[in-house]
Each structure stands twice: as structure tokens, then as C-alpha cells.
Length: 550
Image 1 (cartoon, one colour):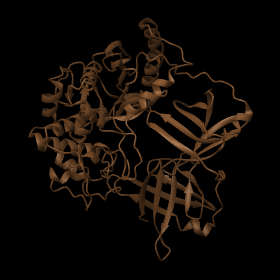
Image 2 (cartoon, rainbow, N blue to C red; image 1 turned 180 degrees about the horizontal axis):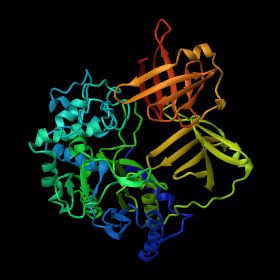
Image 3 (cartoon, rainbow, N blue to C red; image 1 turned 135 degrees about the vertical axis):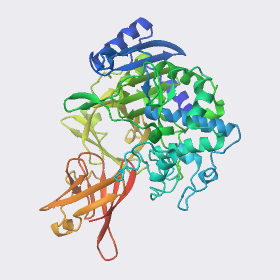
Image 4 (cartoon, rainbow, N blue to C red; image 1 turned 90 degrees about the horizontal axis):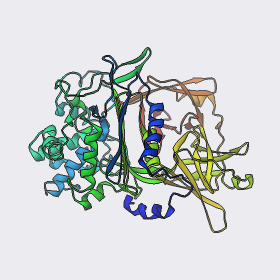
């Protein structure tokens, strides 16, 4: 589903029901009100830029650039942009493709002959779209401290390359920094230049991005901000970051002004052709035909029902986001210097205001006779279940058996989530006026859920004999990623992930369990002798297998 194909449909919807804030003075007042409440004086802050129709209409900074030196934030401060930098890697690959030096369907072994694909065909496109099945090295355990100190790109790749594949390439979507690290390696192999040199010569310098750099901890970089985290005693300096470990997955530093130059160049086809860029902004399809919410280096979704092209970045000391609404030609970028803050909501509100939409939906009353038509069990293409229920004349949505979220109506058949204004639900009706499906729209994309005739599952699950529960007790591990401990107290089963709080799991059947704290599900698997060998984790449509180790 190309994002461009959605624009016509949404253009017809208009913005009825929303107030208009078109003049710059009114917008500035609203922006100032939002941002001054979000970023407090004397705390880490942010630089913000908003453009409309290619013109900057707001550029400002809040909070502190350096807490120790008491230096206020400026709109030209330099931030580590983290995963937003994947766009640069994607564009570099597409430039090389246009030059005939690679094909997106090329197997990566064409450029990295010794990479162990374990019998799989892994293409460059798989790396671009996070569908390669290669383990995401970010967050993996490093008990031998292989990535400490000064390491090379090859050493980082060696850290994850021999791990078992997570899934067959092209069959699932799973965010993987490893894929973008390999893309950087391929860029170097083809161009004969280091990744930082390629960016400087082909992107930064040609676009006049004088305040953008491959991250360098030794270099003196004017106006670079301090990086902070929230500690027990307040704000503290963040952990040291090694640029080589992050490399082409997000080791770039920049300003909001330079990023506007980048945005303009990308969308005016100065870097790659229009037809090439359209591929980058197209939802990638998996082998079974299901669409992901990712293109090449950009995510695709909705901001208050407007189609969006965006990406976020979160790393020690920084939380950043950029959002582009192509239908309205509105661009928002927010860089913050604390990993305690991810500015997704504030950026979306700024975008909504700029296009003349309310970001605080006005609730309307729905007759109870109408509300009663919505409850039921809905399923999407990933076989996930969403439960819609009523209590005290209020409508609730529940993903799996996770926590309930209250829904509030703002138009007929259209609801927003009380605890997440960026997500909406629209119920669709069939010819007999019955509710047949619902559509969720959020920053991460759009999903259709078909209403089923299945009964609502028991929220407390079923009782399982304590002797059976005892067979599940033990430790399970996803190598280098996660370790789980399962324990029993009488006829109740509990699970604890390393470094997290213990939680109870409830039975759907004798070997399938769920939690009430999120939509996670767990299936215990036995071998032919009846011994429990592993547990399969399923959450958000993604699966992982943890083997029993104790």
C-alpha cells in the first residue's frame, strides 16, 4: 500500500470538526504554550523546528543545553540524532542503486562473501526494511565485554553474525540495528570510502549541512549539547557512547536547521529520483502479502488521521523525532538532550496544530443503544485479538488480555483513546447497519480488525493442575538477549524477566498462557518424552523462542 495512494482518500475527508489555526501569530502562541509546559527551565531541553509549504514557521529552543555550565538551549545546538540517522544510510544505498552499483534484490553475500547466512537468501532490501531475520545486536548482553573500548566495524558485526536467525528473511518485521550496520559496511565496500567520508562527500557537504557530522567524541564540535538521563537523585550525565558500535545505524549528530535542509533535499529529489523515493515511502510487503509499517529508513503511519512519514531516535542521552505530513506539506522535528524524554506526542501535537486540527479531541455523547453494537472480539491479519467491551456505559478497548483503555467518541463511529491521543478507532458497518470491523490508526500505521462471532475470552483464564504447572518451572533463555524465570505458588504461575518485576501469567489452555499487563502470550512446548524444552513468546504479532536452560 503506497502512502501516496492514501492521500486522495484522506484529502476527501477534509478537516471538518477541527478549529483552524492558520496565521503564524496564533500558531506561535499555541506552540509556545505547549512547549513551555513540556520543557522546564533549568532542566534538559529541546530544539524545535516546524515548516509549512517549505517555509520555516517556527524555530525555537527550550530548557538547558548544559546543566553543569548553566548554558541555555539554542536552536542551533548539535544533538546525537540516533535512529533517525538510518535515513542517511538508506539514501546512500539508493544512490548506489541508481548508479548501477547494486540491486536491492542482491544477496548481501555479493558484497560480504563471508557473512554466514545459514542457508538463507538475505537481500539488501531485507536489511533496509528490517525483515532480514538477523538478530538486533542493540540491547544484547555482552558478558565478555567484546564491544567495550575501541572496536572496529568488523568486530561489531562478529558480535552478532553467528547467532541463529530470528526468522526466515522476508517473513516477519523486527527492528534490527544489525541490518543497518551491515548496510554501512556494504556502502564502504562499494564506494571504497568509509561511511563517515561517504556522508560528508555525498550528503553533508553538497547540501550545506555544515553542522552535521558522523559522531566523534574527541572532536571539538561547536554548540554540542550535554547528554542526560534521569537518575535516583535527579538528572545525571548519560553513559558514554561509542560511535563505532552504533555506526550506520544512527551515529550522526546534527541540528534541527540542518535536518530541515536534509528534509527539503530528499523531497525535492536532489539526492535520489522521485520513483526511487516513492519506493522508500511504500509499506514493505512480507512474503505472505501482509504490509509492514516501514519503507526504507522511514516509518509510515498517521498523525490525527493525516498520513505521515516519520522516524524516531532514542539513545543514551537523547530522544528525537521528525514527522512529515505530505498531504499538508508540514514538517516537524524535535531534538531533546535527555533519554528520559521521547517527544513523539509533542511533535504530533505541533503537526496537528499546523494543519488546523485539534489535538485534544472534543468528546461527544453516544446513545447507549449504539454503544451496545460495538462490543465483541476482533482479529487482524496477524491473528491478534482486540476486545471491545462496555462497562458503566463506557466503551473500552483491550489488546489481547492486556490492560483496558477507555475509548471516547469524537464523531459517529469514531473514537480516540483516552490515554493515547495519537491512536484512533473507527468502526465500520455492513449493509445491514451491523458493525463488521474496526480500523485503528496511529503513528505506526493502520490496521483492520474483523469482528468475529467468537465469545469473549475469560479474563482470568482457566485453572490448570498444579502438577502440570510444576513442569513449566525453570529458566528459559533467548541467547544473548533475554532470560526468563518461571516459578509456581500453589496453583498460580509467575514469570520474571531478568532485571524486571515478577508478573503472574494466566492459562488459556494447559500450555498456553497470557498476561494482564500487556498483550504478551506464552506457549510451553514439550518434546516427545513430555519434557518441557522451550517457551514461545508472542507479543505485538512477533514471536521469539526461549530455550529451557534449567
